[in-house]
Image 1 (cartoon, rainbow, N blue to C red):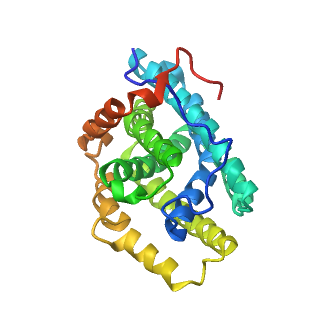
Image 2: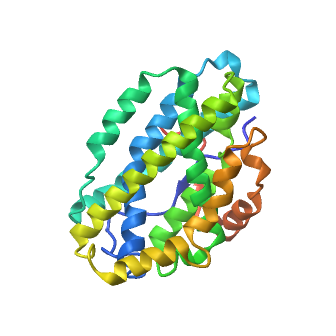
Image 3: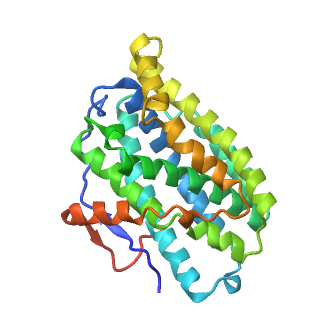
Length: 274
């Protein structure tokens, strides 16, 4: 039986949200918007990579977890499609979509262990970001309530399933060197893409060349609880042969949010289509 739960979030984005929904801060808003823009394509890639695994290589528990991983990712994809539709209405174009689509097509032609290794790498980044969102509330300080709830719910489920792709990769015979090499490659590509899309969003927002924008970026990345310091240790740990996602046990953050926000979600009896 799977330890994961596929949930429906009580958030409606059809009414839209503010252009600088994150406390009026252009950089933080457009950084999170850039992440959201990449998620539907990325989450579909994760789903497809795990579906391509030979199911006979997975034990019954892991098979059930893969099924619910797919269900959670499909729900995330659905919510971020709504989110991104509002961004498009605001005039924010997904400028790097073409390059990501072409890259995903190339990845789809790789062997299954390479595809899952790439999924493991990107899932590690989503888990690091998710941990920060829940551990450091100031990352989302001033956010509109609906979007704060969406990002925290997404973070909770990313932490819940953070080991599924990793365990599936090992079950399929994936080794340490392949995993680390793809992580290094994915790191460069992922952050370059996010930088480009954030810069494009800021330009459309009229904030790209404002000193306050980059002062905010410096605080977010290199402040006391900045992204750079938060991720440095986990990035290095991923390269260890002894690494496993649950060596850093942050299930307490998950339980705390679920308990405090029990009215914000309901468990789905069946997974949404992916």
